[in-house]
Amino acid sequence: MPLDLFFAFIVTTLFISATPGPNMLLMLSHGARYGWRATLATMAGALSGLALLIGLSALGLATILAASAELFLVLKLVGAAYLVYLGWQCWRAGIELKLPAAMGETALARYRTGLAVALSNPKAILFAGAFLPQFINAQLPQGPQWAMLLATFFVIESSWQLAYAVGGVGLARWLSAPRRVRFFNRGCGLAFWAVGGMLALAKR
Image (cartoon, rainbow, N blue to C red; front, side, top):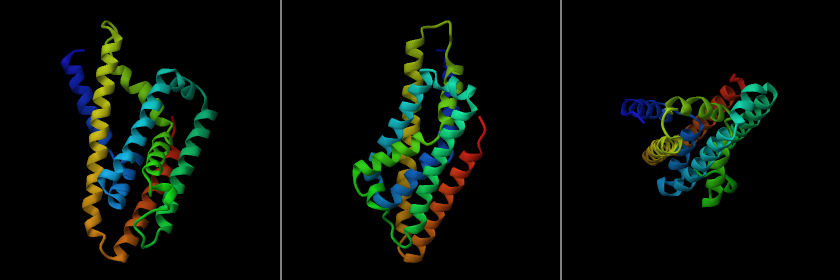
């Protein structure tokens, strides 16, 4: 792969991954609630979900989603509903920093939440199908190029997720008063609702 093309991929991925979205919002929220080490389980779930989405894209689901408005609508509404549910859980937490046990009290629960959030966005399948192939040189062997792109993508994505989780830890120090915790929970709830709403209204 030409170095200039690879550099363009790195720069583009750095900006795309850094953009606050459901995954990064979840890392910030869990980092503040459970600490960055505990949030590694959340990260593992989110990265597993992304790997699955990229795999489905490679198997042709991106083409199917692009062609089927009904399937895309169903998947995005299911994903949006889950994000709204997360927002409701944050909102109703009130002055409690911890969320319900099913959403974070154990490593498995955090993993499942990260996985579910990553899988909640069908646009990620279309993104993988449309974005990654642009950086593949058809005149060169495909396998090494895909391996390089995917390894780079996951290094960048996991680095940003960790950065958001660590940022959440710093935010936790500010959450020393109940009214601040309530403000944080409601802010997270509104953010998840906003992201869920944008997903529900998103077009292919």
